[in-house]
Length: 495
Image (cartoon, rainbow, N blue to C red):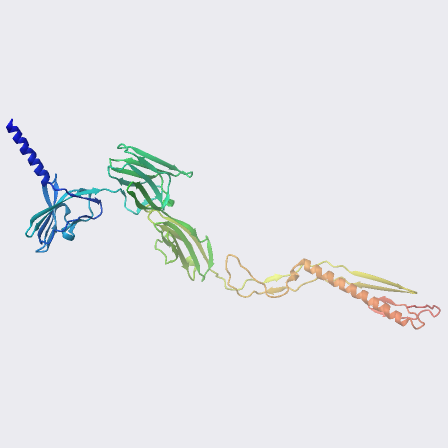
């Protein structure tokens, strides 16, 4: 019995002694991906001869693995083991771990050999915190072909203590639609899906899956991607420790297409110039070339404009001859899909004027108007006297406008329409209406003149009536005869 009591006292003493010898480590918190410093307390006024950092596996009294060694006397320092190339010394021999990893978590001890004092140790308990990590499974930019099915994979990694996440998808800073919020611990393999459909038949969806305790994957799917889907996509995760986001630029390639080309056909004359324009659009920017007929050798052309996905190529043909006639084809391609080309053709006709002699004369004549003899009788009655006037006009001869031979000046004829301008002159005689109008005008003027002549004659007769003789005037044709009246006849003429 006494033996048992003695053993118990010895055991308790050893346990208490070990507890007294076990140091209390300094707790240091670090974040994955950041620099972590294990800060050392000053060693007093005594000089340090050597320092060694060890990582402990299994507790304070477990196996030690050297991770850093330093000798102040020689200035030698080196990182070892899991910290090789990632560690350095700070003030008083503090250990700095660069770009810390989750695996760096654990116990560390610094053993210092101090002059006079001897060996001293300091213990550190490094606890690594894993912040939310988010990344895309594809490299940015991601190039895809229009109308193909596209998946954007976004991976979230959280610590096991995470209890809530808020996941969102954005395009160019604007939220696409909806969000997925997970509260509490979801079971492994649980899926959350959002669907999005548009009236034009587009179909996209987001599916979020829990892969493990700390790993989630969210996938944005385009059933048939279009060029309008090009942009910067980002997935955001809101966590209790903050928010993280990852971005990826999606660029949609689409085939080159000719959007504008010069009108066809182009008809020109020999010696002239013509410019053919061709505009194409595509992503990547299209390569544009002009060819003639079946000749695949590109013709020398000039880029007149290039703006992003659109390019314009001008082909200028100068001093054309008849050999330049033919089909000129604009070809645009950008390798999407491989080997596909868009073609548009412009027909060019170069017409050569072979006859340099002037064209045959142009005969201009007017129709023959029909005219008749015109007889005019005018009677003027005054007090005691009567004056009669007669006039007749012979038939107007048929108007025979002179025949004119118009020799137009030598001009360059531009087919297919030949325009000949007659020389300066009055060609209204070629109009039947104009000839008739002239004839009627002549007759009217003649009649009016005759009437005016008769009125003048009346006035003259009245002047001569002051003498006691009254004469009777007879107008016949172009001769006016005067004869004395019967002396027995007297007339009183009054004004």
